[in-house]
Image (cartoon, rainbow, N blue to C red; front, side, top):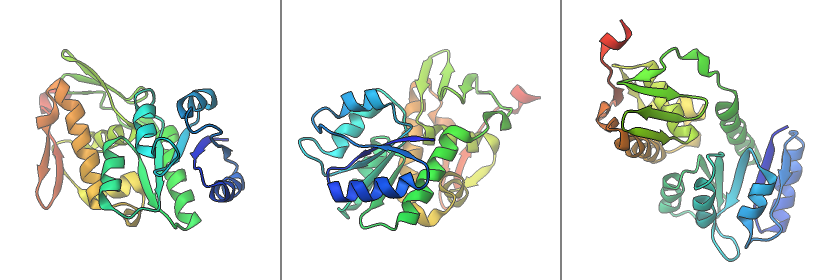
Length: 231
């Protein structure tokens, strides 16, 4: 049973979502004090967080930043606002997905299942490649390490890197990446993928690896590797 934290101040909506998710055997917890979200997050230790943007005291973006400073737990935003920048900002802060209210519950459950599946269940042994341009890739700890240091990736960033590594020296289309990440690209925007890839590049910049993930305009992305490393 996965433990979920639902940060939602609308009591009726919170109760409805909790009841529906409980039918799917999820252990759903709420927040009792919206000024002490991090305290309750630490106590609950959820495996996924669902968070509204408009909250008392501090908004969801604030708490997303706080959570991301301590944890890579998957985060889904809920919002009744329809401004595109809300989605962009949520992705830049490290959220895994964004759902606009009102939403169909089947969409919410599909996104939760997909994120939990790729976060906790994908088999890291499926990919034999453990190094890339001298860097060690630790899929279990979401770490990329080379002589310049070590960077920790979010689950989405590592998953994108994994897909690109599996197709090294070949162009991976945006459609393939979206389908791999979210199973159904109707649930995700082109812009969200761009944000995730840019965030991955930004993290790899510390290790001087960012130039080796190239954007092929109109085609997709290309991760390059020296073939001699794997002869």
